[in-house]
Amino acid sequence: MTDPRPLKITRDDLARATPGPQASAASVRCPLCGAGNDAAALQCNACGEPLESAKTKRSRPRSTPESIAFARRSSVALFVLAMLGVPAPLVLVFGSTLLVRRHRAFVDAGAAHRALAYSAVLLSLVYCGLGLVFLIQP
Image (cartoon, helix red, strand yellow):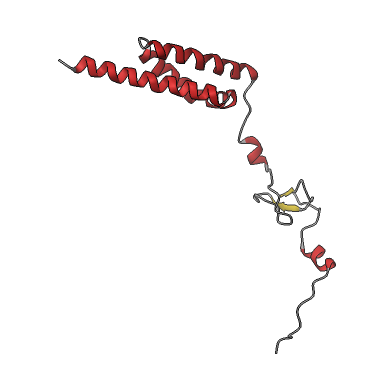
């Protein structure tokens, strides 16, 4: 037969049940409460704070100021050349290559420069398509 009284949990019981500040070699310490968590955990088991593991720290390297400045200059130059229309095939090739190889620098350069570079490549693609249509027509 079960006991009808509710179970009473004390603070000492909670302190013994939750992971303490001691951390093993394969664990990550919570920056907020200091509790030890599994190395693969995304958030703290004790307080729910998001954990920053070594994998998330390495996932996004920052661009250098020189590469950001280069991305800004390149986005403006690509857009000006794309607006001219004549060098559209070159803008299409070089612009798409730049956007793929230096994507992080274009992201760090800001949304306006990234949009400028993508619109330059898109505009040059439209110009190349129109050029092919006019070449094929008799």
